[in-house]
Length: 86
Image (tube, rainbow, N blue to C red):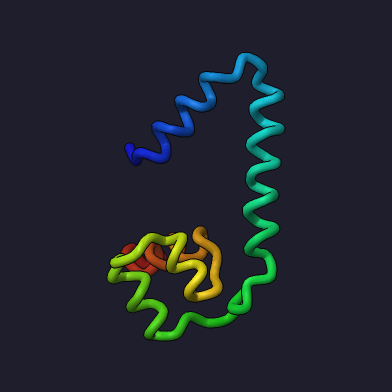
């Protein structure tokens, strides 16, 4: 289990009202997607250089996201698809 998953579980357990938790989580997701919805490389093919940077995994996905102009989720998806061929 990744450390971020543990944090999410612990945070979820802090809420007594699950509706409030769901609303808060959805607002956080909206803020994140709002930041990345107009990424300059949205819906563009991945270059070999970009794929190489993603696969090296030398810097965090957040920093890579800013550098490449792609969302963190897009970077994670690219890495997974490249490794597992989906």
